[in-house]
Image 1 (cartoon, rainbow, N blue to C red):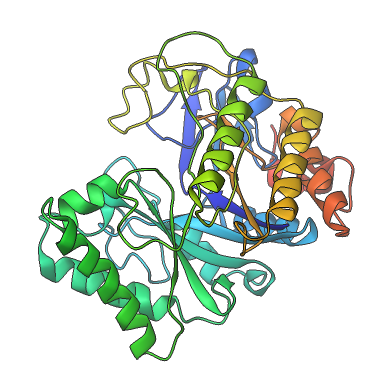
Image 2: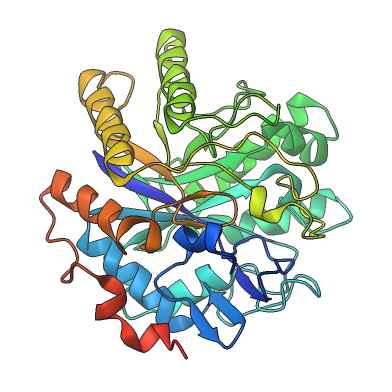
Amino acid sequence: MRHAVVHWNGLWQGANGTLGAYENSYLGPVQYEPRRPYFAQRVGATITANCNDQAVIDSDLLMASLCGIEAFWYLMYPSEPNFLAPGKGTEDAVFTAGMNGGYKGYLVSPHRSKVKHAFIMEGYRTWSSPALAADWDSYSSVLAARMLEADYHQYNGRPILALFDAASFVAQTGGGVLATAQAAIASLRTKVQALGGQNPYIVSLDSTYTNLGFDAFSGYFTYSNQGQVAKTYADLTAVAVARWNALKASGSQIIPQITSGLDWTPRVGSGSPYVGGESVAGTAYAMPTTAQYLAHVQAAKTFIESFPGNCESGIGLHYAWNEFSEGGWICPSAADNYGDRIRGIAAMQGAPGLPSAQINMAFQSLLRAV
């Protein structure tokens, strides 16, 4: 199985156990200690986990490459100035480090060539506001050029692009008219090929508007049951596996979405204006043990190997590298002995894995604990 991972960009800082208005976060209270990533810094009562720090980005890429992870798929935020250019921009007053910081750090990392990258478009972020046809034309032109880079993730020579929230894409890009949105997707394909690239391999990350012209289907996060009832990790993986099987029954091409968890309760009451349930508690799924998570990864690997006709790319998509506050991550953290999840992935792949059993010991320069 080829391993790709959703990489979320962001920054978190909080004091005395409070949650700042950043989506990608770690909390101080003891019940959230498992979410503490290897690069967290504590100075007195303040804990900072800055995913945009260049040293963190470099380490993430090195660790991923050692553990057989082939690519990071980056969420893109086109409303930032020069959103695909090096140098961190600012989308708004909250995300002062730039929501594209992870990707921009990737561009200048000495380990960039070790891990491929691809883009995830969110339907409601496919241009800057207001929504104009010229915005999509400009945005898609920049995307097309970037998708031809040597280290862009491909299937069979075709650059991969994912779309999450197809309904919003149709609403914004097509004004609610399906044919207009279909033409927008087709225009992107044309631009890539006009630049000398192969026809993009476009992947839907949800189940709406399946007729936009997708080549394969996967998922972003796995979720069901809007009620505020605690669930087990097995309940969550059952939802993911059911989607794999439903897609197979439909005859679709599949990139199985692999879930590492979902529990956004740390965000509730944070005052964040962003989506994800910050003001309302959703279903909380129990955090998996490393063994449970790796069993789910193995199930995805077995599925891909058992149904090659439906899984032509051989890719499994992990959610996610660093969604610490949303509850799904495989970045080394206190929850998994600082790296047991990705060490397990390495073992499945025959990859060398991490050089240390305790990554927080191997990367003391990043901890800076006071």
